[in-house]
Picture (tube, rainbow, N blue to C red):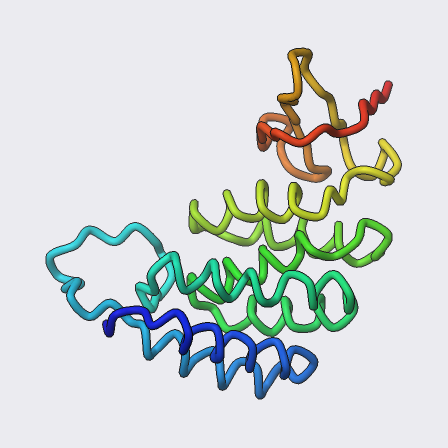
Length: 194
């Protein structure tokens, strides 16, 4: 893995944002970026696998920069974000699935296909890191549960205590014990459901 040249990485991620609406071109360019930053110093034989998915072993800083660049574009173009998320998910790599989960979190809650996609992916994924990303990043980033009917989105509750809120999300069609808990430092409206 070469040292991360931030100027180069910013150019690469800006290029990804420019081709956001072209999933096949985006995936081709993303593969090149991920391949460029592969951490080859880790030998797969000597390291216990932390993921059941194939991985590029990309440094977190690279993925965060990609997310930083794509986040605003995804918020402005939610339909294209959903299409790109589907393509990333189908790619099947750890990094592409994590980026797909990130994009879901940037899609406004009014998008009807969002909840169905999130539910299906959560049920299908076996990788614990991707599942956690789906249940936290996807749910939290876009605050997608706010504005959903209680019958559709399960329950959302906030605990007491200063500016920190505890959010418990129960997804429909998952077992009742499957929950994601997320502490958030931002103030969120109190929502109650029967």
